[in-house]
Amino acid sequence: MPMNAQPLKKKKIPWGMLYIAATILAVVLFGIFNREFGNVFYTITHLTPGNLSMAIVISVVFFFFEGGVILLLMRSQSIPMKLGPAMKLGLIGIYYSYITPSSTGGQPMQAAYLRRDHIPVGLSTAVLIMKFFCYQCAFVLCSILSFWAMYGKIAAENPGIIPFIVVGLLVNGGSVVFFGSLFCRPVLGTICRFAKWLAGRFPKLARRIRAAEAIDQFQADFDSYTDDFKEKKKAVIWGVVLSIPQFILQMSVLYFVYRSFGYAQAGYGEIVAMQSLLQSSVSFMPMPGASGAQEIGFSTFLKPYFVNNDLYAAVMVWRFFTYYLVVIAGALLVVADQFLYSRRQSAERG
Image 1 (cartoon, rainbow, N blue to C red):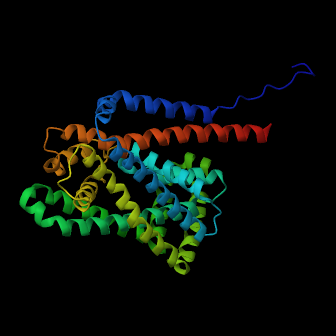
Image 2 (image 1 turned 120 degrees about the vertical axis):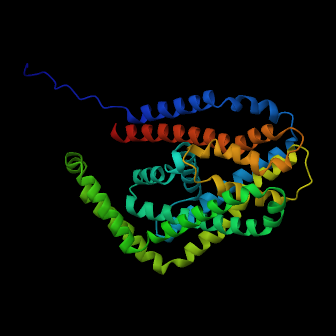
Image 3 (image 1 turned 120 degrees about the horizontal axis):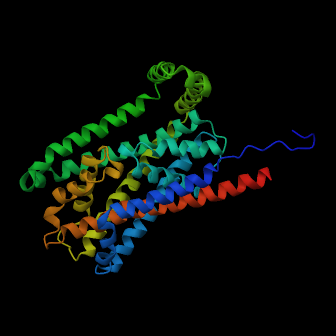
């Protein structure tokens, strides 16, 4: 090599741009393989616009509550955050929950986003699990009350759905117990030891990523939250309290869809109760966004309410507002956020 020759610089893989491209591709494929997605726009144009507008307003307010609870729990741990970033984090979590099986992607991706802001993974994961715990408490409480209020009507008119409701309440109630138990040191310690054992089955990879050290650091950060939690129960209680109206708002979208089809026979409380029981029955299904199960469940639970041969159209409109619209908004946010972050990183390096 000549004395004045410059060493070749190793090309960096543009992970940020690849991530943006993958997100766009996922949304395009999402639209292609969901046939009802294209037909939903025609259906919407023939419905009452005022009620559909209310469905959108309700969804926006729901995200304010989502961001507000995250903000409350973050600030209780002295993690600086404003409402805007908290709402962004909430939408990102819901987006990834909707596109991953059994809603498993939300909290890990939120923790990854917080890691960019130098917030320890163990601490952020603990806060995000507590956020999920607060929401699940509200979810289970509202669903139990809904079942109690609607049991007589369901037993008389649609008894076949009762076993699904009971199973759903048991599974979601079990999730409250499980995630709550993570804040017990022996339980977390057992999980971390298992993670170390599992990493040990792949010694080369474990050494490369320093798995044992990472797990120990995660456990230490998580335990620091557990110590603080004992002194800051007030924030958690407020998290549960605020999650109740948030859950009710999410369940209220169906009522305005119902009214947009010209129905008024059932009251607001009845429709919200049936929606919460449907959600409880299918939320744990191992498909992204519980796809398939949501549509079948809607046809079973809400059939008595859409009686003018418009049940399938109602399913499409309801899923558009509660699922497809969130996926589109989340994907746009992810792309925009990653693009801006990549530009900011380039400016800092340059």
